[in-house]
Length: 592
Image 1: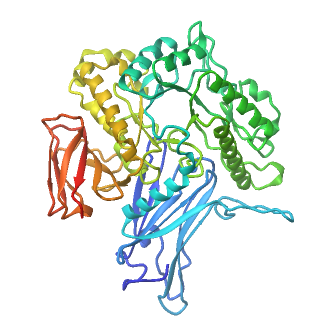
Image 2: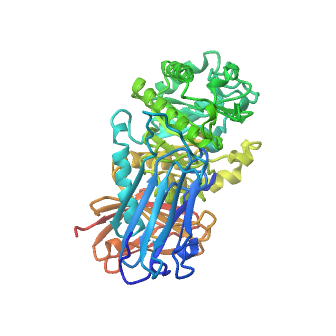
Image 3: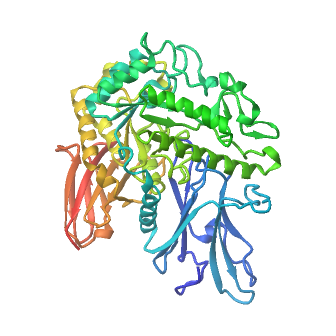
C-alpha cells in the first residue's frame, strides 16, 4: 500500500484496522483501532521494526480471532480487506516498510497459513513433490468497512457456488438441543416437539446429541460408534422414529462428531494409525481422540456410518467439533503444524466424497458454535452454527458481528421460544409455572427470538409445544416470513447503522440490516435491549436524500411500535415502549 493522501501513515486519523475477537458463546466481537493503538508507530529516523500480528494455532481456527480483517484509509476513503481460508494455523500481520532517511515507505499486509515463526509450520519437499499454499482472498474497494464486507460477501457466494442446487438453500431447521432437550432425547420428549415444529412450518428436524447413548447413562466417552440407542426410541427404534419425522412433512437429521472417538467406544480399539498423534500418542483424550482422515480405513469406516444413516432416512447431519486439537500431528517426524494442515485437508476431501455419494444430504458445520467458521470449512459445508449462546438477549451482538464473517444464508441463528436454560435443567417445571406463562402472554420474548433467527438461516429450538395460541401464531408467522424472504436474504449483504454492540452492552439499542445490491430494499432488525430510552434514531446515511417506505414485516400487526423516516436526513426514528423488544422492518427506497 503506497502512501496516498496528505497525512503520514501513522497519524491516528489515517488508518483504522477492524478485527474480530471470538470466544465460546461470544462470537462476532469486532474491535477497531489506529495503528499506534495496535502497536505500530515510528520510533526514530530509522524504519519501524514493529508489526501488528494476529494468529491462531490449532483446529479451532476461529476460536480466538477471525482469520480476516479490514484496513480502512479514513483519509482517502479506501478499504483493504482479506480472509485466510484454512481450518488449521493462520497468521497475518500489518507493518510499515520505510526509508532510512525520511518518513516515506508503505504499509504492508502479510497473510499466511504456513509460518514457522507463528505456529511452527515447516515442510521438507522431496524432489518432484509440491506444496499448495493456503488460499487467501485480498481486495480493495472505495468506501469503508461495510463496503469491504459487501465485497467479501460477493466473493464468498462465488466460493460456495458449487454447493447451490443440490440441497435446499437455508431451510428452516428445528434442532432439539439448545434450550430444549440438551442432549437427552427420547421418544416421549421428542413427539410433542416434532408435532409443534411441523405445525410451525419447519422443514428439517434434527435430533442432536444423545441419540446413540442409553437412557440414564453418560454417553460422552462413547463417541465414534454411532449406533442408535436401544431404549430411547421405543420398541420400534430410531429408524422408525425417523420415518415418523418424515411422515410429519420434515426431513430427519442427526448430530455427529465425525472426527472424534471416545475412549469407551469400540472404535477406540483400532490401531494407532487411525488417529492423529503427537509425540507418538493419540492427540486428545477422554471423550475425544481425533481420527486421521488421511487413512483410507478411517474414511471407509465413516462412509459406512453415513451410508447406514442415510439408508435409515437421515437427510441432514450436524457435524460438531467440540475440542481444539492443539498443535497438530507430528507423525513421521513432520512438523505438527504441517500435519494439522494436511489433516484438515484430508477431512474436507472426505466431506467432498460424502457430498458426491449423497448429493441431497444437507451438512451443517458446528464447533461448539462458531469456533471453526472459516471458509475452508464453509466452502464444503452448507450451513454454519453461529453460537452456543443460550441467552436470546445477548444474541444480537453475536449476530451482527458474525454476519461480517459468514454469508447470511449460511449463518444458522438460533431462535428458541420457551427456552429452558442449561442452569435450569433440574427444574423443567419452571416453564409451566403461572408466573412464567403470564410473562410469555404478550409474545415479546418469542418475537425477540424469532427476529434473531430472521437475520440469517433460521434455526429453531425451544419448547415450542408449550406455547399458547398467541405464541404459536407468532412462531408460525416468523417461519412464513422467513420462507418468503430467504431468497432475498441469500442475495443481500449486511449493514450496521448503529455499528457493532458488545455482548455485555445491555443498556442500549442494536440493529442490523440486510440490504439488496441495487440499494432499493433492506430488511432491518431492530432490538431495544435494556435501554431506558423509548426512542432510537437510526442513521441510514447511505440512502440519505432518497424517499423511502417503512413497513413492519414481523410481527405483522403492532400498534405499540412506531417508525418514521426522514429522507432529507436519512434518519429512521423508532419507538419501542418496552425493554427487550425486537421488530423486523422492511425499508423500500425510491430509485436513485
